[in-house]
Image (cartoon, rainbow, N blue to C red; front, side, top):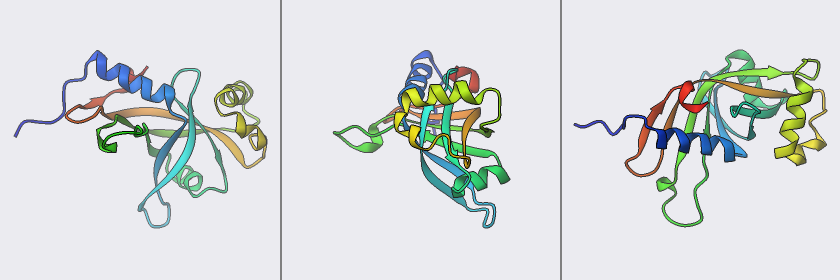
Amino acid sequence: MTSPIRPTDDEARQLARNLMQTARYGALAVLDPQSRAPLVSRIAVVPGPDGLPLSLVSDLAAHTAALKADPRCSLMVGEPGDKGDPLTHPRLSLQGRARFIRHADAEHGALAAHYLTLQPKAKLYISFGDFALMRLTLTGAFLNGGFGKAFFLTPDDLT
């Protein structure tokens, strides 16, 4: 059987980068620390100044507790369009490790200002003590660019 995975090319790299740049929400997958079962949450996300995912998370959220126990995670971005089969629209599954940036951290102020330019409603709670910014350090990705367009990508493909 022929592999459905295509060799990664510039078109796939650009599509993946576009999905990261336009995403404002994503599905975050973590491992529940008690059951070790997968747990998925919808989170707000923006491209950070370096183009990599940046989110704002609360210590009260189950996914944050899971990430503190095990920072490995996956984030899927890409929304289905208004027409057609949702499975034919591109989506990108990013694999990586979460890193938290707290209010006292030197980089927090600049990252918070950047985050608010793309998620302005977060102004209501970004300063709450239980919130932290979360950066995703990428280890790999899988792009489903639509029917018959599947690619594995490296962190270098995405930056």
